[in-house]
Each structure stands twice: as C-alpha cells, then as structure tokens.
Image 1: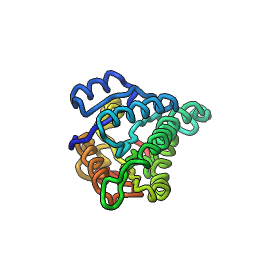
Image 2: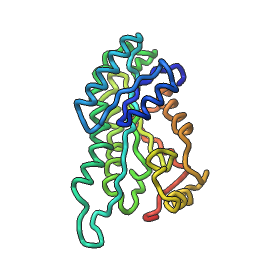
Image 3: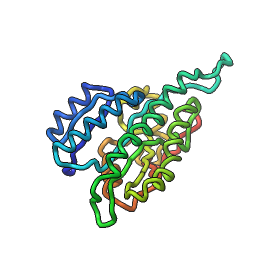
Length: 236
C-alpha cells in the first residue's frame, strides 16, 4: 500500500472485512450504499474520525463504485428501456461518484498542504471505455461513464485554488467482479477487440495507475485510457 492508510467503502461487507484482514491496521472498512446520501455521510464521518485517531490527513478519494445493466433503448417488442433501469445505473455510477466526492471535499480543503506546490490531494474517478465507444445496449452505462469523464476538467478547475487535483481513469475490460459475470463468449469477443495485450487487464495493472495518479502532481483534469488500445465493437 506504499505506506498509505486506506478507508474502504463498499456494499459487500464480507469482501470489505476480508480486505481489511489482509491489509492490517492501515485499512478500515465502512459498509456503504453509494445511492444513500446518509450512508455516505456516515462513512465519511467514520473515516474522518479514524484519520484523527491515526494522526493522518485525508489526501485522496478513489470513487470506483460501478454497475452495468445492459438494455437496448427500445427492444424488439417496441418497448423502451425502463426509467428504473436508467436510474439504477446513473444513481450508482454518476450520482454516487459525485455524492462521495462532494461530502469528502470539505475534509480535504482544510488540510495542511503536503508538497511545496500546496497539494491537498487528488480525486480519482473511474469511467470506462464505454464513455467513448459505447456498445449497443449500453446507453445508460455509457451515459453515466461519459458524464464522469466530462466532469473531470471542471472539477479540476473548481478545486485548483485548493491544490486538489481531479483525474479519471477509463479502463477497458479488467478482471473484476463485474467482468467475471460475463459469459466466455462475451469475454473472448472483448479480448479479440484489444490490440495488445489480448487479455483482460489485471487488478495490479489498474492499481499501479491509481498510485501514479496519487503521486504525480502534473496529472490533473484529464482522462487516462487504460485499455490495451481497445476500441469496443458496436456489438459483441
């Protein structure tokens, strides 16, 4: 963990507890539903209290909650996608990202700068290749991830006077709980659309870019594609 203290927010308590047991005293977990503003508030309060206990400052947020719910905008029966499906995706991927960020920021803007440039940390958000190359059935998902990509620069501009950066990573297919639910056919089709390497990205490869975003102060207001030169086909 490069010496960092990490507060984990997730809906899956079993996974959260498992990660904390692996990482030890430098990690803490708060069960959180990112569609629930009060749940986020409680997790932020808990994180702030833990930071005070450990004598550390909150120096960054990685907003990575995400979900995909494929569905054509209008199906073969001439029925439009349900607004509930759209809301479900947008509430987690976009609203949840913004809500976590806005609630964490007051606890970052007042910290002591940690570098000669006056840095007070970084916000790392997660978009997707679908923000640029959305496939059939990804209208809601692409909209949510495109919005995250689009808010990166204005967020960086809003926060420049505080010395807080904003960076978004747009990954292609990475090994994750979401992609492990894919069929072999879908996975192989996506891997075929990657130039090199022709495989899913590894968690460690993703984590290394997050670490670079945290440490490199010139990374700001930009969207970084992490995709093996993948351009997703219109359909699988």
